[in-house]
Image 1 (spheres, helix red, strand yellow):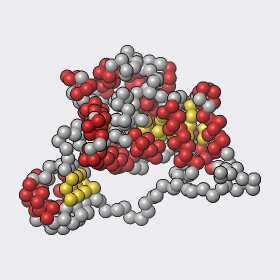
Image 2 (spheres, helix red, strand yellow):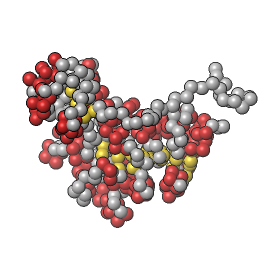
Image 3 (tube, helix red, strand yellow):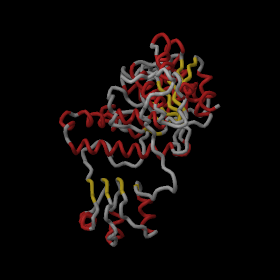
Image 4 (cartoon, one colour):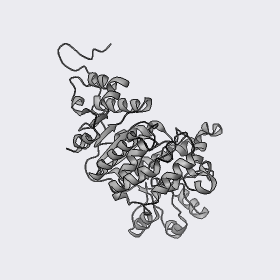
Length: 391
């Protein structure tokens, strides 16, 4: 067995799991995610070799594309391809991935979701008819679990989510906020998480959560609210429906009414609140207060990306097994120094993390004589959190 605390004070030989970084000029555009991008490429006479056309309707481009033979390595991911154009593309070396008309989501989409999109149709037909519920059913249908084509579509969808998520957070100070899904609206813990989210967003941070109910919803709500008066009003309105498991329609419906206070969807540059949920937990619906929602079929990928993108810090509110798992996933990144500089990890509520679930002592033991020790913080007052991350 490897001795982790050698007598000579030297670290044992360990593998370093560093994250690759890109240096030098930006790579040429490969993925084309909207019709305007393709129109610009064609107008500029740019080569289409090696491009990825993602979920586009190529009908209006048919005549122009038929004049191109620089198509080797071009990949068309879903969308609409007229028969004559499809033949031309294949003849000249393009690869075409079809979509599945029965799929409840667009696997090749080039943008993140909004809450109104995921909950579309709920008011008229109930939650089971929404794209969110139908996607979970599609993911869990036993007849599809061993269907290689559907598995591939789900993986492509998640890759598209990852790509869109990476583009959204680029250059932003992203702070992840973790916490239990059982925290009820109308409680002091819910209000505290909301005030934390609001304080972080007010300092220019993009607040990212697991996108579910409880503390996650509260943090997203706080970041979404434009001022403290609006936040207080929203907390009061939501308190009438404290839990999601008493009926998703009532729980989500109350939140959507609050969401309607802002009729305009924030631009990508102005996003303050981000949810990163998963269909793996179908019993746990997404909260509506993420300005954008990156929802994944793969929970493992979703959790890793949430931690990876929380580059400005990770704040952990009291939670249970799932929250503890996320703490130690981040601890693994800190221990092996995956991210440089190390991401601050702030645990909130000393009693919870030292007595109820004594995570803090184990973190301290892992961090002994390692740089990660300086990245660990334990506080009782959420007012201390922004200064630890941004001070």
